[in-house]
Length: 199
Image 1 (cartoon, one colour):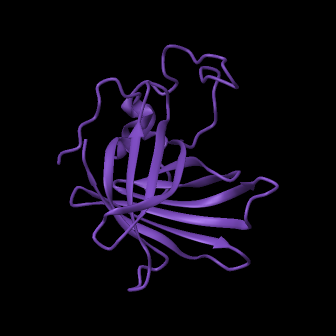
Image 2 (spheres, helix red, strand yellow):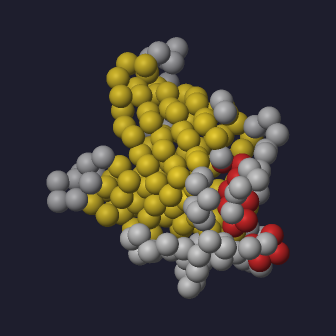
Image 3 (cartoon, one colour):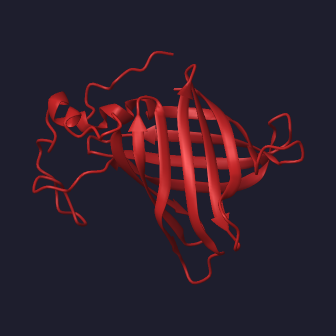
């Protein structure tokens, strides 16, 4: 499936544009061993004209044939190029941005490339149970690497200290892996999935 860039997409989201759409597929918890539990997942990346993508992932435990057994979790967040906010950016709260994007042209976006030839990005993801992750990383073509800068936990949340995530576009499919440091353990495989684009 070819990547289509929406005509109303703000220029600085073009590096992230291959994520836009609805994705569905299956994955395994843990390292994906034979006894690892199965899940199905639906992920969406949408935009609203502002300089970030909105992210939502809904996941269900499933049997090994992909039949849903019960809800597992939902996460939601925002993905953007990592850059210093400027006068024309919106916020905090409901303070509106200028009607003209801060980065107006492809050339201005290209100037933000890092030394590795990619773009620095930031991602915030919120989970039920009072946990929010702040990731920094980079997108380089159809590959994304993220590491947590901070994991914020509510007073009743389970222990969770760090995570990494990788995403890649392979033959039009979205593959991802998530490693987590929790319950006093170092980073270890938490989950992975293979998703196909449905819209």
